[in-house]
Image (cartoon, rainbow, N blue to C red; front, side, top):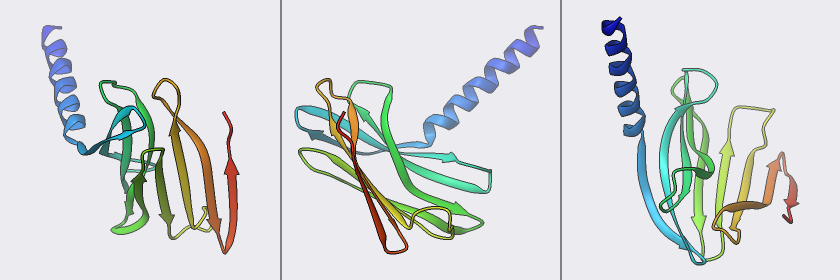
Amino acid sequence: MKKITGLCILYLLISSFSLLRSKKLLETFKIGEYTYKIYDEEGFVNTAKEQSHFYVLYREGRSASLCSAYISTVKDGKTITKGTYLHTSEYIEFKEHYTGSKLHADSMMKRYYPDENGGLKLKELTRYRGGDIDKFVYEN
């Protein structure tokens, strides 16, 4: 029983270490009075054949993520999703561009603003598909 427990602990330690290695700090910045950190985090979305990297945003000193967006997704050696981000003193904006799927939009822009506690709220979403533009504004 001790051997099984030891193996389980070793597995958890190795798994945790590999998860930590897939998180890379990209930038620390301020929006309004709050400081945020944005990371490149690796993961698999639908299958092991789709390797994705995400922008994941945290408020400085906090462990819970506030929002995320694609940096890239590669499937069978081909990039099918590509993303960028931009921040100002008022908001952070993510743009995602999709290829190879007729189900998705061609691209999407999401804009998050800080709330009174330093959390982030999605307030603007613009979806581009086949020349059509759908813009959503959320007041929350």
